[in-house]
Length: 85
Image (cartoon, rainbow, N blue to C red; front, side, top):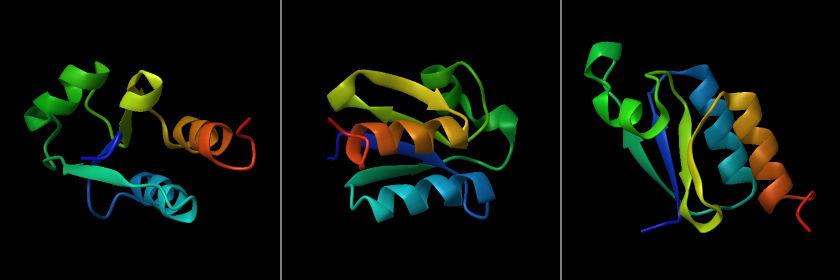
């Protein structure tokens, strides 16, 4: 099991953006596919407080339920990419 988990919806362009960054950085991650219906997205809502995707959890860095694709991509770059200390 990877430290990073991504809540994903196939066909979502925002999710694709985050998957692309995860892949570019060669990070291992688990994917949880969420239902199309927002009303059925109880697991992602429990994690993030909302039903939109993408959402990531990064157990290695105590990140629980980060949403917004631009924020996630920036976080991944800062933490694991060229911006990493």
